[in-house]
Figure 1 (cartoon, rainbow, N blue to C red):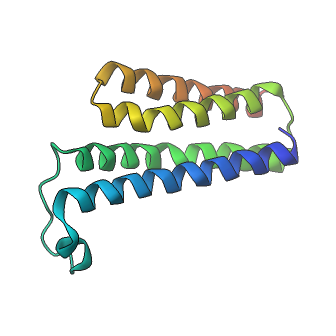
Figure 2 (figure 1 turned 30 degrees about the horizontal axis):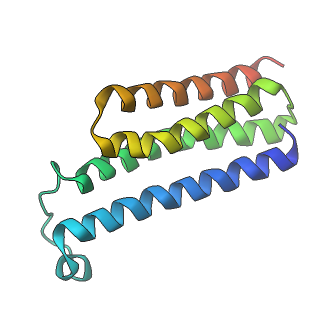
Figure 3 (figure 1 turned 90 degrees about the vertical axis):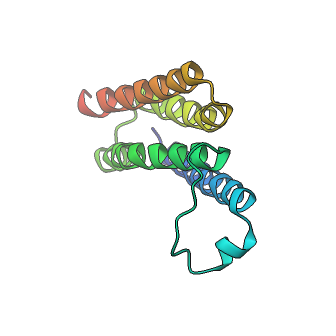
Length: 133
């Protein structure tokens, strides 16, 4: 990946993170109301079966893979690798993670699983590109 591609990938990643957080936040507010979201949040509302619960789980899953993606982008930068596999893997990861959020929200388990698998394959491609110059 070139320097410009790294910057683009990181900006896309940041945007995706903000979309995840925003979607979960707005869905939670819709599910539990303003009083709870403005309050001390001492009691955790039951949202597991609601859209808010799905988006919370999607956010948590996104945050589980985020360090791997960021570590691989950092390794790409530090090593100055420009292998096409790295850029392609980053693009696949970001696109599949972008599709993962609406797939999870829809409740279609096979679609969600497919998006997760494709995103993970993107990480594996990046890893191979970084590790095998």
